[in-house]
Image (cartoon, rainbow, N blue to C red):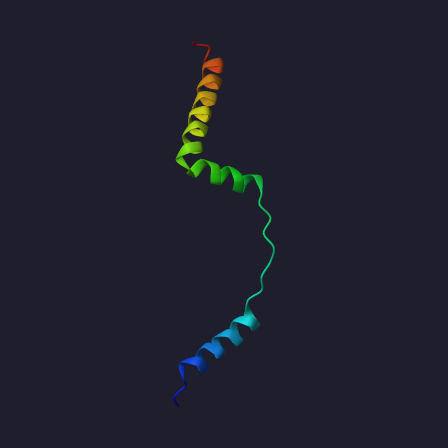
Length: 65
């Protein structure tokens, strides 16, 4: 049995219409922060701020300056 290329793609389209459902996407704060931290322009300042925050917390609990 030989099926033409057009017939194959029609069959693929029919199968995908029956099996795939599309939903809505809601962007969360986690998604926004993830996008900001992977870009060098915003990710480097965020990393520096996080390191400074950890350092300041550690030094306040350790009692050293």
